[in-house]
Image (cartoon, rainbow, N blue to C red; front, side, top):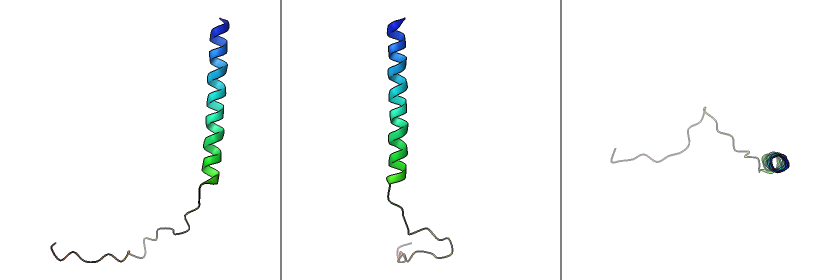
Length: 50
């Protein structure tokens, strides 16, 4: 019974650590200021073989 409790505590701590690391990674990621606009098409050259 003691081993099961220890394993559950370890799994809980690992899960909590993963949540914290994920939140820090989500906050620290660089912001992409070039938002996609559906009003303007990107300049793509025409394909003459199409």
